[in-house]
Image 1 (tube, protein in one colour):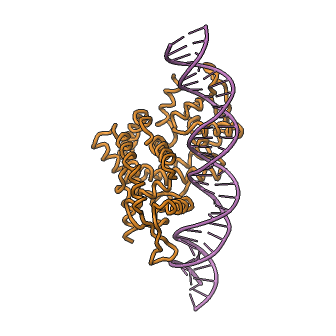
Image 2 (tube, protein in one colour; image 1 turned 90 degrees about the vertical axis):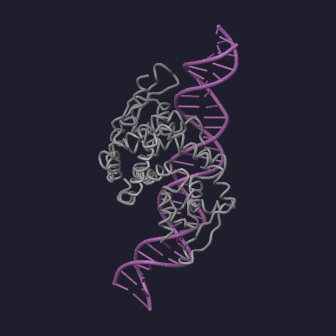
Image 3 (cartoon, chains in turn yellow, green, cyan, brown; image 1 turned 60 degrees about the vertical axis):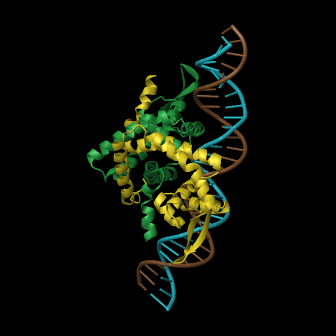
Length: 159
Length: 159
DNA sequence: ACAAAAAAGTCTCATATGAGACTAAATGAA
DNA sequence: TTCATTTAGTCTCATATGAGACTTTTTTGT
């Protein structure tokens, strides 16, 4: 069992300990959840996240979503086409730029979003249950800093 | 520009703010990096991470890697087969269980790992440059808690 | 004013990834 | 001890995803 215990310590043992830990946590949070949503509701990742984004802010464009999510435009384009086909969103031209389309959530889309988001919430709570309230606030603050800082480093080098 | 500004605030505006922020940060850190490694070195995600794991701990099995990474066994199996084919790892049977194979990094594998890990390190530093040293320590501690806690919530429900 | 470059969104093609089936070995229950 | 169940790893098939090409529109530079 020594080897197994050893691999447990991999979290602090890699050359990129913070990034590895973030990836580790997310591998166990997001990947299974998104797989389950896909199996159950037939939504791909960009579709899942786009519905979340549209629930937060009506009328965004695909390009805006790409910029603020890190998803690639081909996948987002597919998501938009599929969600429209499924009656979850509608599209309208942007009055100020003919290249752009504004995306709008339908009642069907809202209902779909409401079918999975409460469970994601519960899961997030479960994930965070090991932290005290002050610790959660701390984590949020630090993550907010990292996220705000993204434009500073994310284009500098992909590698 | 109001809409754009509004989407910027999505980080705290979703129903799963912490998970969303983690995913957001990782979308900008890991996804572009792994895509670049794949384009440059022909390594898939499980291959990239398996080399990292083997650099940390020699002789692990594919199943152990799956358990401690969140990667699925089919993908890991493929990674193992490919990395062996590329001369990056070798396999030996586990003396205590004939179903298992112990994985070993070759010199070629080490060289490959060394070709991308320093750049991932630099990128991690860039990502963390907005945090003070105490803040980094804090973040690591909180992430460690979340990670240690994974077995508690990750099997409870995928959704 | 015009041309070059960039941006927005869609499509095609190639490849990575997931689900499930499968075989063999090990474990657990009766 | 035997049998049912689980585990480890591989394979096939289906689907998600990424790269790059494309058309149209807009922006930028001369």
